[in-house]
Image (cartoon, rainbow, N blue to C red; front, side, top):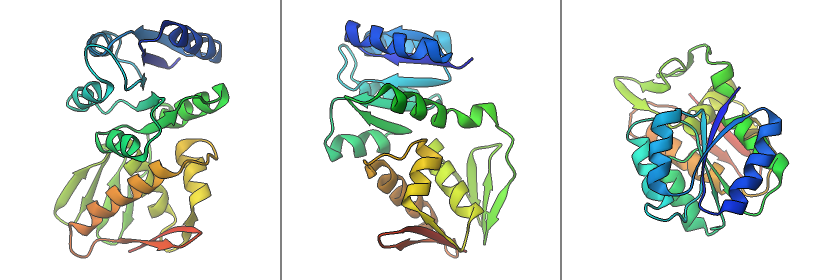
Length: 221
């Protein structure tokens, strides 16, 4: 059973999430403000966190910063804020996913399962592409003599691109495989591709991610 921590200050919304998730087999813990969310995380050690941004006492972004100082637990931001700047900021701070209210229960459950998939199947083979080595056991990538600790979605993007290196991976495939559902808002994918590209660009001789316009991406060793 997967443990979900919901950090949300609206009581009716919090109760609705519990009603949605518990019948799906999730154990649910809750917190009504940012500081309580940090405390609940330390007590419950959840498998995934649903985090609102507009919280009393300590904002969702501040909670995210503190979480990333101590854990790589999957964090799905669930917010009414839909501006690209808000999404990019959350992803830059280490959020694994961003879901804009309102959304369907089916999509929420799919996102949770996608973000916790590796918990159920943690043993993956080491992948190589040129001088890049992806190590699932450490959640890191080595390129030459440099080592990078990757965020969860960066890792999964690198993994899929390396598995199919030299071939085009469509945007639809990336969204479905990594985010768990074919959804229209692809800003999260674009931002993670940019971050992964910056990793490669830091090391001479590293693989390159080529954009195939209107189709997807290809990793060139």
